[in-house]
Length: 294
Length: 223
Image 1 (tube, rainbow over the protein chains, first blue to last red):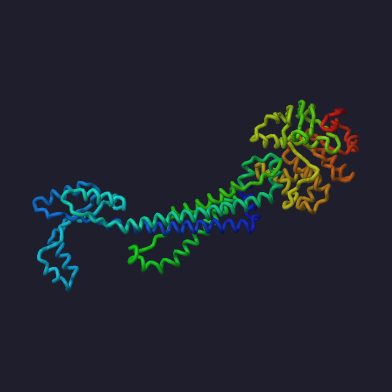
Image 2 (cartoon, chains in turn red, green):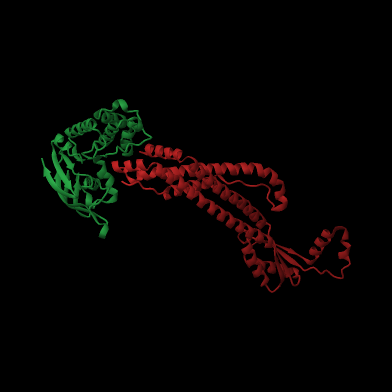
């Protein structure tokens, strides 16, 4: 019986002809678009995660604490939570850093009547806090400490990148959804056309006592086969685009978004894409109408 | 095998109301050969359609091969139809398949074991004298051959009941005689037959119990 259903599905696929090929191409197009957005979003996510590791929060102090009270202050800062590492930067060290960064013009700093730079504590948020939301929360908790003059969070641009990624994912989903809908409609049309062609067969099948499952399964399998072929075409297209584009893009990445290399979809993600294509095809097959009269 | 109790069928309502069948009651025992005779539009096809549950009666009860057809659930219809072979005036052969494939199609659809399909198909083709034309396509067959292929398709699943809806309607006298002979052979092997025809000249040839329908009413049950 399974052999019969499979053979009928393949026979229907051949009968679908150009409409069947159009359905495959449309599903492939929608999956390529979805996969492309997914790939870019994936790499943006990696960049954001990487930059999250480098986020620092600088806590400027009103006064430099005496050495005897420094440990207690650091403990209180750590107690606000979400802190991975702390480093105290004294006024003197801050000035040394400034001079070093001024290089040959360091003597400008020498002429200052007194050290104007505040003492500070560099706070590295832990992994859970290294998100835009986490960093904002940490900054507001640190700013509430009485010894603190000002807190500068280093997550603004990461925040922007994350927003861009969300927007990007939204656009990707919208484009993918529109293309997926078009693909489902095309598969539905292809399957309905085949049903129209095989309405005599379906009538005979019903008259001789075939169950509805035997009549419907070839239709479902036809759609699934179209979706499967389309998803393999989409993956091959993405692989090809990756192979062509990555050697040109990778030299630019470290100086732009800080990534060393561009990742491709993992085997599981590729399988998910194939599954999505197969599901799209199955939906088209299920939506097809055209019951023969018997 | 078949039992109808006060069966009526009405299509439409009001001014467009048409009574296709009106209070039909009869029984056909297992192994009987019964002719259903009546002019075109008398209700023969409507009656046959209700027997294989392509239609439902407006009133009355129908029992076929142990199935209460009137109360049959949709999911049970395939089981009823597996016990019935049906032949139509139009052979309804599938154009893209050979005679062999048309007949074997039934067994494949019903999930018969693969090893049984070829011998059973050839046995059915042999029974209607069409073995030599097994590889022909429907457009290469004469009307008589097409109707014989249709008969082979109806009997290949070994049904207990054969419903023949005007199978000789499109055939000349010789070909009609051939088909009648084949149907009688099938009946002689134990299959119950209900043979619908508008051709009054066939009735005396068949010499069997005859039900006569006129304007949806059963007016005669004799023989």
